[in-house]
Length: 292
Ligand SMILES: Nc1ncnc2c1ncn2[C@@H]1O[C@H](COP(=O)(O)OP(=O)(O)O)[C@@H](O)[C@H]1O
Image 1: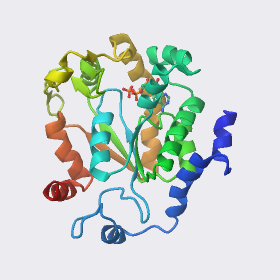
Image 2: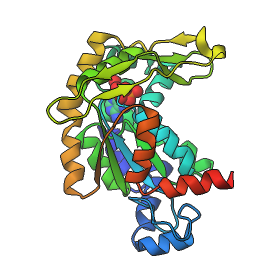
Image 3: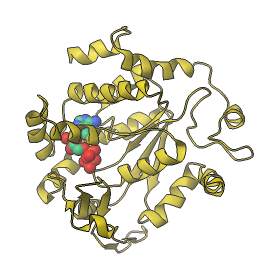
């Protein structure tokens, strides 16, 4: 934990902490939504600013919450392309570390394959290293996926930067399990697919959900791999850990007035337009596609 605390103190040695802090400093004079619209190419004239718009001088700083398998990576990735900000998934950072022969690799393999959380200290070190690399490339803003996952991580994040918006994606638990078990990754290009064909009857006033499989293109079909932590027992443990350690974050951000709850109505074709609408970005995408 000592290393984490060191990262939080303003120190010329910690340029990644300085990078995230700059976000904090640049928000001390908050621009109004109208200002943001007028001055940023992200908010076309005449359209409403997105929910949780970044303030003048920087791009959005968003967090995606949600149980394993809910689709955080998919939607955070799409929004990152749309808004031109990096999508930073701490799960990816952990998997990169696992596939390297670095000193943390064997320690992390055991934790991840048991469905447990990596320590706050290690995950913050990996995240700050990634932010530092982004800073060197001139990145501004971010969409965080899989971080924070504990109240402690959220407090540390709040100490170093401002979060504009927290999107909480939700699906029924039975769907989450099926989605994780159907998840496949192309071992060559790294793209995600899903072989599960999900149809859940509506009950207690909740509409049914149907999610068509997301099949790989022919060039990926023979190279599919399954994540080692996507087995039934490990997914159930990850869901349990999520409820215990991460669900309290919903209240943490609700109190701050930053939480946007979003019940996914189905697969990508049904959910993406509705999510854009909830974020006031539907018009934004139309203008982007028209300009492309
Ligand atoms: N913020 C975090 N804190 C602790 N551990 C993390 C964090 N992010 C990722 N991990 C580790 O990496 C694993 C994979 O993360 P991720 O790809 O986000 O999985 P999920 O599909 O469960 O959301 C987690 O089960 C956990 O062991």
